[in-house]
Image (tube, one colour):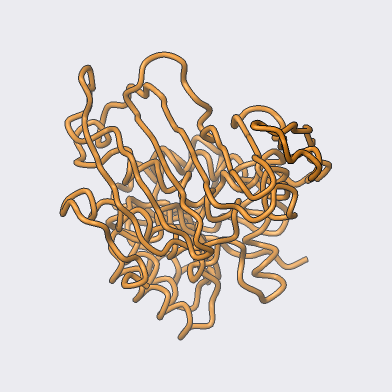
Length: 343
């Protein structure tokens, strides 16, 4: 089997997660590492026993190795440059989230992908878990009826240092895209509008706003409410968040750790009851794919081989980054933002 030739651009911390999962694959090989700091690329090569050349420029790396795929693991501000360069040189791109730093960049990157007819997809690793797949099935199978409310709570006391400690919106810009993308995945809907209130509560060790409440209107008329904090000490939620989806006939719950379940109205013959009787429904949906980064890489490579858009294709993922950037604009302006203007 012919292997895809991969240039991995960006050799910082996140590259370790990609390398751990990519190097065990039999359908690809890393033919070059690129980083503006050559010592970072050299260090990554040594850490994983790679003998490939290292570069400070992704275009040179592609030209000298004949690569056909680029992993873009650079900082968000560099995604536009790395991605468009790779696409113009005939490479498909698998990118770390977020898709881009601005919506204008995201739109241009998608245009370049369409012109080049190459694959461009984004790492959304939290879609690849048997429990979220089972939860999605409970919601979309009609078990609880048509959903009207989606709620996600994310409360973790994460003592980061570095760039997150000093950025303006560390929670919304760096973390919330995972939960926002999960909400789209679980419900099969896209965002229509957002109102976001950011704040930095007492005791926060972040310079910027580390907490937020967001209210999204979704394309099916439902409302998604996100409540989150990265400086919440005690009783942490899962990194997958804690979820409640309420529909016409019941409610589906997932704590982010264990298997999801639903409680639905037991029968229609309860006319005289103030609070109806409910029955518990377990999900019988089974998913046996690889978890996290490995699962998303499986999907990206499968889509590339089959000539189809990946589940996290850029044209779909722009809806998730719109939720992030729209929330930031809403918090900044104090008004509700129409996300249809973003796409």
